[in-house]
Length: 512
Ligand SMILES: Nc1ncnc2c1ncn2[C@@H]1O[C@H](COP(=O)(O)OP(=O)(O)OP(=O)(O)O)[C@@H](O)[C@H]1O
Ligand SMILES: [Mg+2]
Image (cartoon, rainbow, N blue to C red):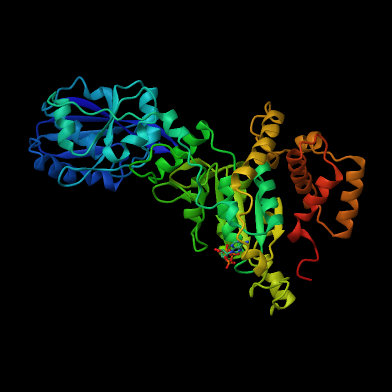
């Protein structure tokens, strides 16, 4: 007897329906066809054990199972549950009519309990699209899938529940998540707040500008100057996520299997800070069973690379395409997939191997060639994509022992939001430009042209400081953001002057 069940596979961040056809006939063989990988082939044994423990037995008939579409590779053990239900149904144990109306996914343990899966959210979106009656999945993933409106989501813990449901012997509980409510419960109490940072007004200002225009930023300074601390404060001044952004980010974390059982929506901007020993695959994504990497987990949030020169060159090189395109395409022999990767890059580094180059009081023991070599570990094309480069000097004892709290993040965020509103209005007709950092040369010419005085200042600064040509566009973009923070329509000399200050590493005379 031929029966069908439905599962799904995820490619990139979208799910595709997988039809599982089971045909049982006389004989006692087990065939699995349709490009399954070895983990699925092993499912036979898990299924037999799980059914056995639950008190169901598969008669010794010949089972032919086909997973369609056949040209799509199916991986992992998450098909155990739809396979098991299909196999059981093909032996007339279970009422047939309902099975085809559900998407079923879950990994089985030998005792029949159901283990969590990855990618529940995109699968739920697919189930909703296909107008199925419901999505039966591991209880651990139920809240994640329930974010999708108008879809019945049934979290289950044991295969017995599923079998009894299809036999009409029990009801399954529908998991309901109020997406809007969940989303609006945005945390506003961040762990790190700028009120804890003493002094460092100019660095805070640079971070405010970066947040206001979506600019990438690098901080260069000696150990203990507060680089890591201030980077961690950044999410508290960024604009809150929109519901659309929140869903996109949640989807990626769902595909990566990074959502906890209690999480349905990620409602704050992610802050990812991978260690410098990270591999290229972990950073960019991909691998045997393709997974999103850190750059995609940081989608709509911050990717913080502490001690930038310590990352391997390959890892840093891989950032170049996504920094430009805001997504990453991974092409391998077996697959080609795309993950979104629109993040703000915040990097930090010591100025030299000993850490004290340019330090106001401590002497640096590095030669100038050592300093240069250290900086050169970060390639030009990568630095080129970082609009704001600032030096940090540690605060004095007097400042650090000051008991008065500094300006809170909420006040800074208010200014950031105002500047962002101006940009939203300005770019409302552009397809993929949302903030100043994303301006194309055409937009730059239209919106960021300085006044006569400004041009003269820029020219003399570029000559005097020996600024490279590539710094020119960066300065204009950042100056546009500073003008927006000032609520000015034109880019004035003072805006340019501040932007020029943010090109510390670009000067030819760094480390000379
Ligand atoms: N301006 C400041 N206000 C308050 N605390 C500060 C400030 N600067 C540094 N600190 C304190 O010093 C600690 C060390 O700072 P942090 O780890 O951010 O330095 P860093 O620049 O990242 O150093 P490293 O190069 O060693 O990583 C912080 O945890 C914080 O307690
Ligand atoms: Mg640090």
